[in-house]
Amino acid sequence: MVNSIKPKTAANSGLVNCRVCHQLAPITTTHCQRCSTALSSRVKNSVQISLSLLVTSILLYIPANIYPIMSTELLGKTTESTIIGGIILFLEHGSYFIAVVILIASVIVPIAKMFALAWLCYCATRADDIKQYELTKLYRVTEFIGKWSMVDVFVVSILVALIQLGEIMSIKVGFAATAFAAVVIMTMISAHQFDTRILWDKVD
Amino acid sequence: MNKAQLHLHACLECDLLIDMPDVISHRTNVHCPRCNHSIAMGHNNAKQYVLAMSFTALILMVIACTFSFISFSSNEQIRTINLLQTFTELYTQEYYFVAVLVFSFILLLPTLYLTSVCLIILSTYRNFEILPSVWLGKLMSYILPWSMAEVFLIGVLVALIKMTSMADISLESSFWAYVIFAPLFTHIVSVIDSHRLWDWIEQARASPHG
Image (cartoon, rainbow over the protein chains, first blue to last red):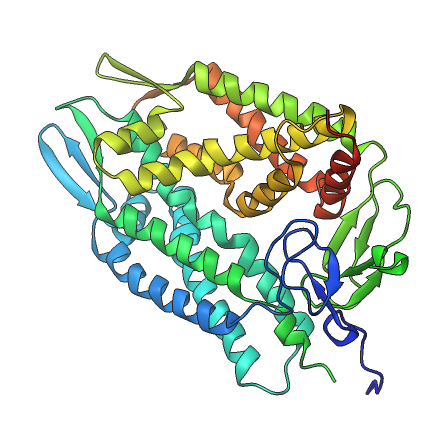
């Protein structure tokens, strides 16, 4: 059904919504009266900022996978393991549960997130006929799963703290931990900068 | 700003204007009719409830930081760590960036969030603001996406499953405190919707400064 009446939004009613305290103000207001946050009807250059952070995170994802995330020293012998290498090691040892958790948290979630953000940015700028409701749902999932990728970094931090028995057995962090944490942060800011309202602005 | 605008609310995700009901009944959600974004949730005595829960969570956090977390023994060597060592060990290995992140995500930001909400609620009761409520409210909205207590809990569990095959693990009191803290924190966050939070801040500001 084609609805000829335009839905009443803040923007077309001459109002602007504060992103922090959710108070409405006349559209000409520059700063929120209640919390003095800078106001703008839509996040400025939202798609460009999202995309640039997305590219940064994709680039950081390369060292996160190439470099070892931790190195285990067992009786003087040092073995370094990458994220993928760790998952394969767990599969070989038969611990399928951890392998799946790490696989989901550090491989599937970040990659799915990157694709989702890229798709959202594409739909917001290029596509004409878009499904706003589904895309908003996709955005919510993207925002929700964001921080769960940090699981791997936390696992490493606990192992590193706990397993320090000198020569017998000790674990050291690798550079991939830094890179991977940066990937998670970049994708989180990227998702946060994306303004779903520009999707709904296409409703006529 | 006229009176009618006070009850208007613009959906954060699709910008649709919504007339907010005066009273939202207990445990019912107000959703945006267009994009289904959850805007507010009713609760009969949210203020007391959140204050009590936040105090509990803060006490649990203190317990989690004071006692030992997990101990690990292998070949008659025992190592016991406390919660703080999960990031101080990273710091000594010169991974400053990751150390600061872990510290903020699991400890600093959740604690700041809870302290802020306690201070805001207390200033609605008493006649003075210890710290400016508006400032605290802004702080809360900025730090909320970065509090990862529940993610850390899953991380701890994964690490435990990983280690049980290697050595004997025993869980200490601080671990149990964090196990209760993380779900409690998630629950508190789900009760504080921003609509209600800013109502409290308005109340705190309305009370005369003394």
